[in-house]
Image (cartoon, rainbow, N blue to C red; front, top):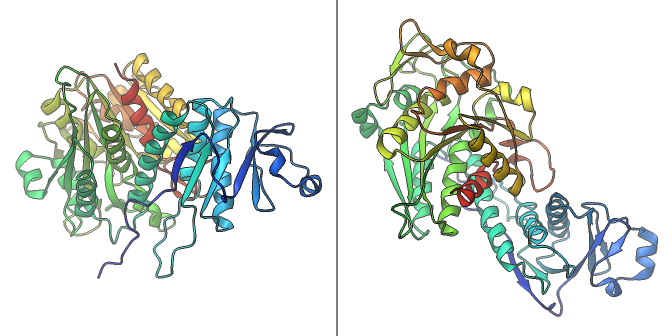
Length: 478
């Protein structure tokens, strides 16, 4: 019998902007390095402040009587995002359900948006429990006459996409099988105007020849699915068309090339790339972006059984290209290959971007807070890096090394799935074989998709990384 999980999506604090404060609400005062106080200094008790000696450093939060102070340091966008997250965590700890923040009148839209993002995400919690959920912040009023309302509203939408990505990735895999992931996404998009979902089952996958998805999912009693999300705003027939493809492996044992027991429980987040694509499409539609966007998520569970695919197998993908299997734990690239070929042949988009928790090698190369980015053009790489910078997600471009390009050639098939050599680069070179002649980028988010610690707006568990980057990339794309 399946266990239950928290409702998806997780409710976030309501964040609004108003020109005047409301009576009776606990109030937070902004303090920059110095300390330099924003509006509301007169509300604070001098004796309490003298005993505390605030510095205004980023994330410094202290309760002063009924009110609060929150430090924004030097006032960078990152400082404001971190400050918002620190404030909401303190408010949650003290069970302050509703409060307001007096923003400086010279606050920029970018700073206010970052602060709102931190407030929305910093207190995120996902827990399967029979207990009554802990008290949390219900709403925050940002008090300022500065023109920041649009930026705040956009940040709230981006935060909701990040939180939905976290929800989907955090859901335990006894609940989250391929049918649940695809079906939950389809249910969610029903309430998003203009966004449609189509879920294809294993019979359709077999009929179409999605050999990579069927091979990976063949070892599980829970069959694979293929999710397609479509955003086509009115009047967009001649607008650019972007396709996002996300890895949707709902649990990864490694298959016959089985993983070590240590850490395997974290493989519930191995579909974080697919979750980012699902969430990004909901945000693209909510923001009514004037571009065409398609999201493709091949969903499968990589399990061990007598029906599991084997090292040495040759798999025929959608479109006919064949792959020699070297390692069944390199399953993500197998399902992405089918979906990318579907994107190329059925959609002929202007640009193709895939996102996946693909290789442990990328975690070793770039650590746990930066995603690896591979691209077939300098322009596309720059656009994605810029999009990430604008929303607080770091990507580092990696090379598609020409001297390793031939390593993916197979003697008994068209390509080799796990050729050895530099792991993340080899995986990207394999995927490039399925990108057609399209401008293509691959985001390997194995490191930053999950966190064991709290930092900035991130909490332990799935981080929601890449969803905001995809949305901003679509916003900026021309």
